[in-house]
Length: 209
Image 1 (cartoon, rainbow, N blue to C red):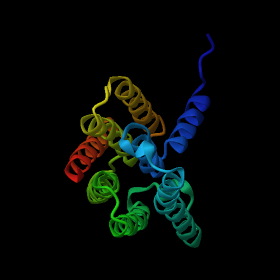
Image 2: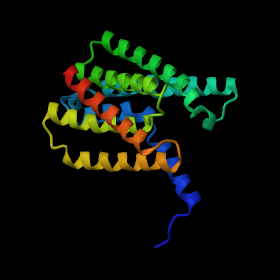
Image 3: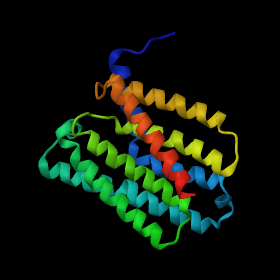
Image 4: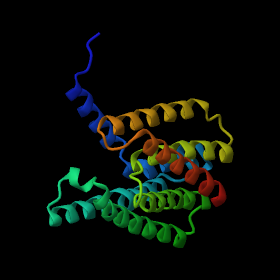
């Protein structure tokens, strides 16, 4: 069986981190919500509207704004990942999430829908604060958040979480390994990120209910 070279391993880790970017965590959570809750019976137009709104505020707007800011400052993607430069993505993303939470609150959205957004927002704020002293992994925090979402949904909507939980733990392990292969984080930073995301998701989704 052929083995991956160091360059192939690094490229694979980069691709995996891009595919499972922290920006995508909320949209995955809402997709699961439409699969495992009574909201699967909602009209298709409503589902599309919610998903597009979440997509805009959690992915499109933050990414475009961060890229504009990066180009203005002439930073590379690698420079943007430095701890002293990570505040800008945090602030932009947090501001966009706050706008999304306010919009959903004005729409009288279900509390557990707000819980997903608030959990992600709080996890982002905690990671931003911890980043002052410690470069915690936001990529793994997102995976921890999705894992916590599976556990919270299983409690709220009474389904067996074991198969999806195993998948999420495997994907979370891959993400942590990828971040360490890319020398972005240590093992403690990876584990710290996972538990921040896990706890925030479980607490705020269940409180929202």
